Image (cartoon, rainbow, N blue to C red; front, side, top):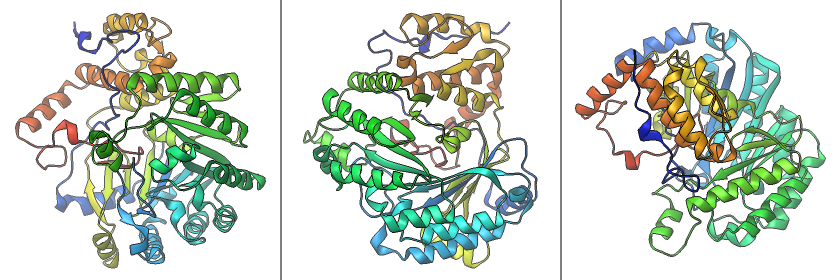
Length: 471
């Protein structure tokens, strides 16, 4: 009979269950192919019908007009590049695959324009891409088409171009409405300007309008956070995200904190902010869709972000984009010159492609369950009874509502969900895929990471901003 030591993953106490809130690290479930195998394997993927799972498209726009102080993903300054040229090449890349069996074999349920800052592009440029997909891709009748960006870019001309082309969802990163805190983060729009812009967009009544807020920012208090929540609740929004600041060591904000120029709230404060936000939104009638996302109306589905966690197939286009098809993950060239050069040769600009996954579907079921606040261990392993001591301990410190094998997370559990996810991943790997752990140990001993290069210390591995940023 199998045994399992769950004690290393016990929470410490109800006030601070874990010392730190762990970043969600993408589990490397497959190994990279050798360079000579990439092109032939890509052709096999493209000529295979990808059915059985919902299918998505991710488009990466690798430009930003400004470098926000908290962002570790700034790549290409907008002013130095011809974005019309980028769109031309992006459409060239899409045209290489749009009529292949992989794309045409089943409906596409969501398209997401991420970055970078997609909204920074001139009016009409993203519309060209949307129209191309609507003309040539097998989009589902209710396909969710999201434009991500910052509020100052969503002027009337851009908004109308997006809507006219077929976009039906805007995800706008505000972080905070507080003008003073925004200025410290490198954001220019004032509270009044932001409110006015949201109200102008909402007058069209044509898209699901979503606002991203962030807690744990410099000088943020329970009072300023409540002001953010009140404004969001009173705006004509369809959805809202409440994200915790994830401080990356390479960012300007992190350097200011290191030099004692700026202070940020503690992890306990962040937990309090999360509870404050979740409890307030619940009282106002918002629906808690996933750990960080709430819906106010039935128009908002958060489809793309949730389906990614379920292990859906997603096509990816654009420099630095990452995707997953048939369980095989890929990343496109980050360097624009290499991206353009490969397309000039009529080639998909793939930087890395992995082989078949080494871990089963239980991983995606776990990820999706954690996001919904409900994890049924009986669906993930036949050895679910071995988790009973961990379930009891997590329940004792307030992370779980119950002591059943179908675990329901409390609000505290949902705040600490990334820690719980990684604990369950490690334990389930021991039970379901011990050969995977053995392989990873051998690679670590050989000094190799999953991309075949010298392994980086854990402390410098970055958390992806979005699930589509796959390494």
